[in-house]
Length: 330
Image 1 (cartoon, one colour):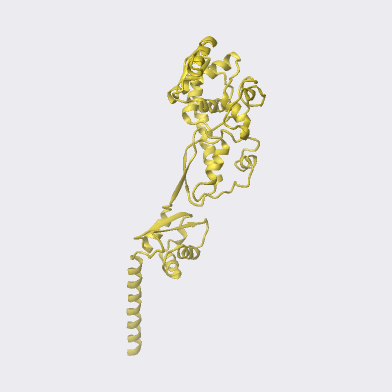
Image 2: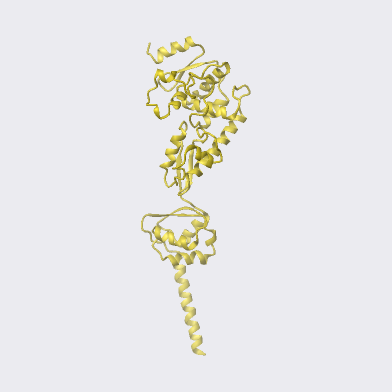
């Protein structure tokens, strides 16, 4: 009987020692193979595989120890998918807490006002840790994947800085940008001036893209919008170079020639009246607001002064004088 009691005492001591050692280990900083260690956890990934993933990524601890801690804590099923980064001082306890909170490491990609969809795609393709799921897709296939079959992508994505979890798909960022632009256009359209010669939100988006490309000084957006709105009201061609350049596509070499202005394309607003068939770029919020609420102005022309601002004119004679002064130096 005495030996049984002694055995029990020994087992209890061993268990207490093991528990103490485990409690001590849980509070000790994990050794890392570098200054930081990163891991992306997929949705539905098993705790055993997560533990193995951390070890492979550079956490210098027994895989089984991490796994048993995740399991024993009762929080293993609460670990969230995402991208995580840990550094010096991270303990097994704080590692698990980070994953349970979903305290992810985020990357960002900035999409610029006035960019084309082609530029958007190029920026997404080189973004940090963003899965290029659309790399082999055509523009039409991307729009279909976004639930917009048959819709041209140009102008449909809101330019902004987007944060995302490392390992996210580029299509997810595009979906957010698409939703953001739709919301911005709807808000602008709801606040539009009552007498605009624009019939739909899409027409407002198209004109806003032209305003975006034509604006040199931010303070002039509403006046530039007024010029184009005034032209639309009287049936005057928009005669804007950016639409011609867009129509030339990759053939544009940086030099817009007279023959380019005279060659008819769906985007040549010198040869065709009204708006082009699609937007020509991604307008920002300021250009959308200026388009739906243009400045009260009778101007029909403007010419660059060479300092980023423009000279506005109500008549062709005034405009010609401005062109001579600012463009020809006469």
